[in-house]
Length: 222
Length: 294
Image (tube, rainbow over all chains, first blue to last red; front, side, top):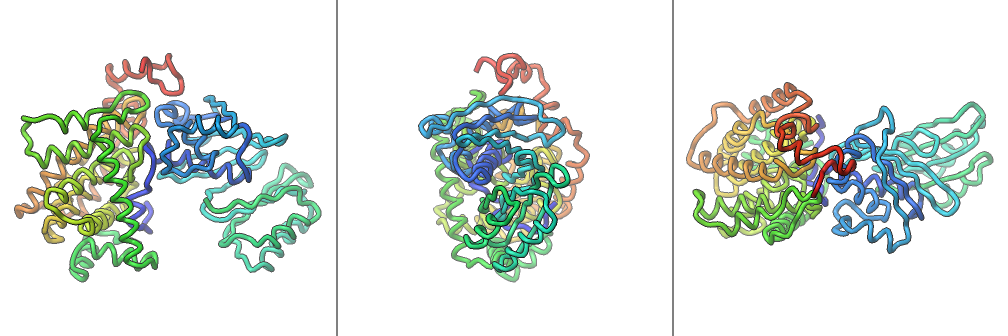
């Protein structure tokens, strides 16, 4: 039970029904995946797991995730026409159900293609419209979209993390939370850094220019 | 944070004049937002509720599975039942919003999507009957939020956590308390109304057919509205409920913990496990919905 509550946590959100977890949260999950990708995907293959798989169609979970990928918010009346909008926007959509293993009951795996690049983003709708992205590509993640997020794909070199945090502190942004993971020692690694305020373009360019940094994604709060 | 006990909320209501004013003062203290901004945001919620009632009453809303739709218009058009105009209209409005929710229309979760019909059903109908303006309804919605927060301190307001009592039950308590104040009752009377509503729905299980927010969820919005209306009627007449609201809310949490998982939104028990429900839901036709022939 959460004791810190606004009346708007009780009355709200304004949402397209029927379910805050299976519909509103699913829109948000699609929206967050789009933000992580940094653009609208050209193609999306969506695998629904667990309760998403068994009751997803009746709850409009499929429409909701596609709507989020198209940049719609949970209260958008057009969610119900998301497939038509996807077609108009040239985004191909394929929806299947499957077992994603020992994960939250409301989980989806989004395989998003943009140009030649494909990235898998897995996330869950964890209740009340809140979501959690738990995997980005091969890396474990923990992104809820509530704060600006910096995703740094880099080579696992000594001092790499310190270099990045030094640039962030120099830009006067404050790190709220940070996670690091790697495939194996000395190989590809991932930093997930949540900051209280978005990073400046200058700081982002500096990080991108660091030796060992392969890709940088700056995801705004959604 | 919002007031965590009704006793605290009552003290604040005495200081500020009403439950609604106390809730507003607390929201200002918590968020730093100005009163006008908070009231404006709540007025936006009110507008969404009103649109949902209007859309639902047209009878055009149909759920994706086809299991629900059209009942609000049916209730609205009928005459000769046992309830007078106000109660009948409140029930129709509650069903209208629940049908809009089930058909992927826009609602305010109050406190959830599945229970989104009760507050508009009760508050908008009574305000219209009595000619009360939107400012008064905004106050009532603030009061409703504060009452809901007292329950939410003890259990998550979701069928998965504590059964339907934590959705429709909470909504009925919020609506009963808020509407009692809206109609001129004291904060104490509002507390009795909230208790009277919640006691009637304690133990209500969450047993959605096919796991969908349709059957019995839409009908339960009517149930919650009727229970709230009877609680308001009693509280305004001076009826007091013997167990204080904080303890009724505690009982809800305790009953919720005792509910087996089959009765907490898993579609494995209650109405969801009946032969008729199993007939409506088939594993064969469409694996994505489980709904056949619709």
